[in-house]
Length: 279
Image 1 (cartoon, rainbow, N blue to C red):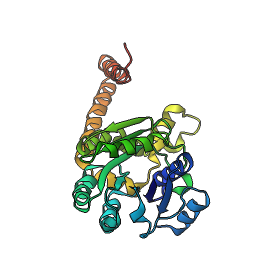
Image 2: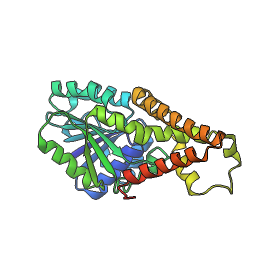
Image 3: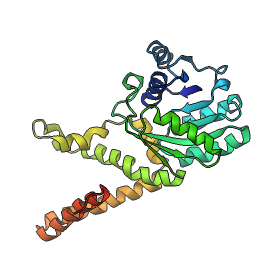
């Protein structure tokens, strides 16, 4: 197949490298940075730049941009996408993108499928892209219509580059769950590191500190957009954390060992239950 990838940052660049180096498909790539495109060609991540002349040849177009940029790109290039092609986005929120692009795809004759590769690093940009980024990762699809053969094509493509778990969800269900599993973690990590004590932690930290602070080094522009476009789900999760933290704070302030122990036990057991452990 001929595959176009729009946006050669961490995710798009890693997809380009993984597909080019692990499959027989031909990959074209586009990015706002001409230097990034040249480097992508140089390291064999893409065959050549994705142009308006090559776009109509693509069987699959993967758009790895911010949500609004994704919507804008597909709308601007819809007339160049060939009939029966598959267009897939990689955004961290799905409802806003799917609501905007599914009707357009139906009108123009191509298939739009929402997608979210559950992989990443605390760094961004093509310089950090790597073909192994998706090993043992989950890929979420939010299809609404289209032949089963199209989903088989996508499943085969993504499993061939390392994904080991394929999940199917509605856009709304995706956004509700991702508010907890991804977005809340970034908010908590980013807030946690703001303690004045963080400046004095050297020599007093171990794995728990590193685990909790890793994603504090986020791309603030991208995450601002993602948070605001999933505001209802995310603020509900934030409020739940605040409510739970208040219970711990109250128990500690009141020297209430029984309540504190019960809170800790409840959290431990919930984690074990979620992990499938028997206790």
